[in-house]
Image 1 (tube, rainbow, N blue to C red):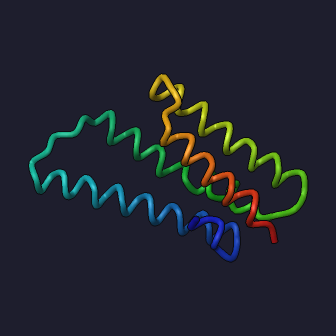
Image 2 (image 1 turned 60 degrees about the vertical axis):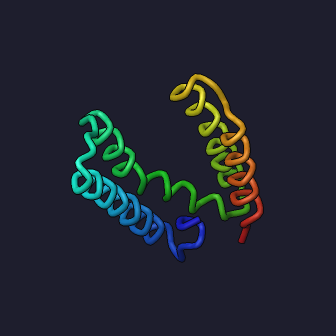
Image 3 (image 1 turned 90 degrees about the vertical axis):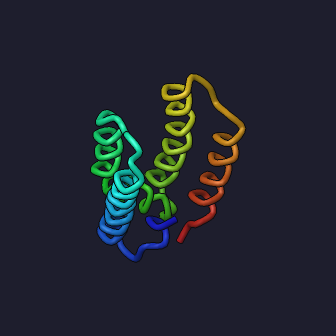
Length: 112
């Protein structure tokens, strides 16, 4: 939503990266304050997700267009959501289907 509502693709990348990195920092500061232990694997994994978020938001911003590229990007986003659900969690859950439908509505109905 942040990416699609941004004025330019660069603003989308900056806005989403700022959101992801600040949420990550806040999450781990709170975990440290409450003495919860988190594996460094999770820290590194979420840090890599935050680092890749500008590229992903850049792609999502371009789904607003009307050409073939925007349609291909929209389909790729939905397909990747399903693939990641299977790769990371071994199955597609009801929540994954609901999220994919909501994302589909967002990326396919927001054409400028």
